[in-house]
Length: 261
View 1 (tube, helix red, strand yellow):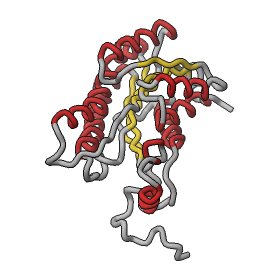
View 2 (tube, one colour):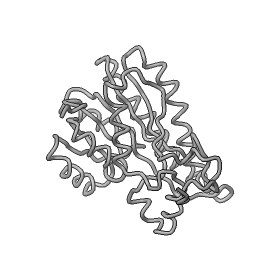
View 3 (cartoon, helix red, strand yellow):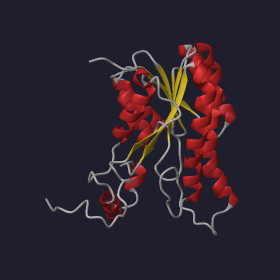
View 4 (cartoon, one colour):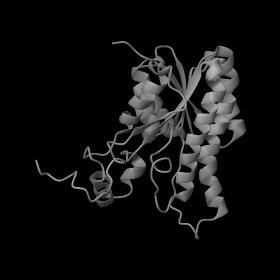
């Protein structure tokens, strides 16, 4: 079987669990050399162990909002591999916060982690990718913000909507360097964080999906794989919705989940 990312060096930011871990597993099976980063050393070490049967992988501790941490990460990757072909920016937080009760500190924390980190990581990799005349940047966004609203999460939806604007302008600026930048917009994906909401809430979330199931982290991994591969070399500034049809119904009251066949 052809490995679509054979010998490509891929930096995955926010790889310790959830969607980042799913992306790492899919990339590993497709031949990418993995450089994983996050804040939890034991979780990162577990991911490296998981993928080590398929590829070479190492992890680096770092905070996506800290410029020194991210600069150190990029420097270490370059020392080890001498290039960065793929950058996946996956770090994100989504604490509940209602308007009128949310503090500026809470707002800034989400914007910094989810949106400013996208600018920071992209900016740090650009000199390398420009010199190479090659780069694939893929960002994990969400349907919440770009496509739909989500009460209690205005900071989160603002951060994800901001990613859409960022990649469109960045794509124009970077096209002449053979650098593409795109985003994946997941719907409800079964992750460790989602499992914490409880079985009843997960059932309600599943009912909103025409395909009748929650997405998996590998579902997002495969979409990211496509955008990171040379098969998508003429696609830039775009978002790919991966949600099992969640945003399609005009109303949640339509009987698309009824057993009426």
